[in-house]
Image 1 (cartoon, rainbow, N blue to C red):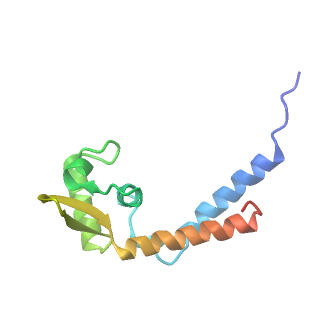
Image 2 (cartoon, rainbow, N blue to C red):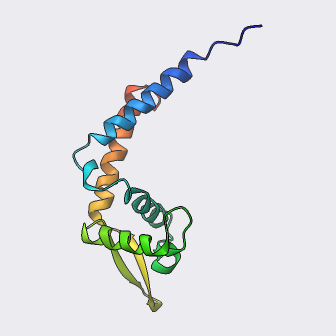
Length: 125
């Protein structure tokens, strides 16, 4: 018995997905952040978007982002590049929250627009 042939729509969807990923890399602002910093920025933006920005201490122990020293260095690099800022928690001045800057949110919004446009081209949305 021969295996079933793959479904064409899944192959087409995957190829469109790969095309989208490549096109996101060509956006004007996509080269402003290194591949090492992007996962950290995404984690920071995701937490902020969900209404629970990371305190620096919790971010330093987050799994999968590197050692605490590496994460601390990368937070500083993102801050120097203008992608994040540190804000003091209103209820406890000892707690500093890492939040995405307007620049970071603007860059993420441009990527979101590109995804939406690609989605329209695929007639998925």
